[in-house]
Image 1: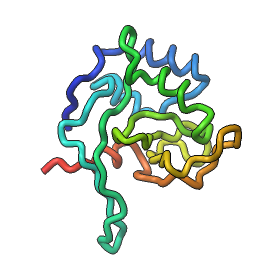
Image 2: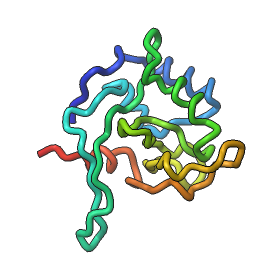
Image 3: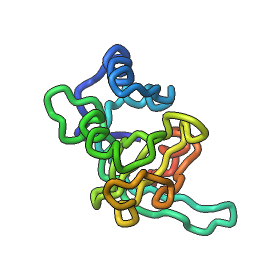
Image 4: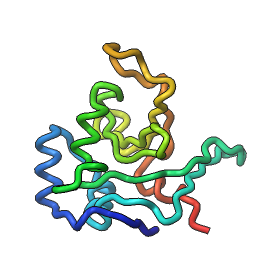
Length: 153
């Protein structure tokens, strides 16, 4: 799997500082991804998932996975967290988008920790209401499984 337009390399210290600022703990697989790529646009960006019967559950493009941007905050994790923190469940961290407003998230707490989810913008709760999981679907049980869902053919 390769990524284009990634942020410059980041360090474990920068990731730890971001975790401290957000008061979150990132799953190890996601930390490894940030250290290797620091976000970016997947060169093969079609994500698909089937159920055990082979029925297609998801088929959409991933626009970008967020990274740690020091000078450019357009797809920066901290910036995206500040935009979505009141709109997505608190156990989830926004880590990417599909280019049409839906947000890819990773679980950072509780039973959701480590899982990768999609937050559908068209079904979000009304402003001022507490975010719930009515507009959230699980994409993968781990970040590694999520990356395996990209069409690499």
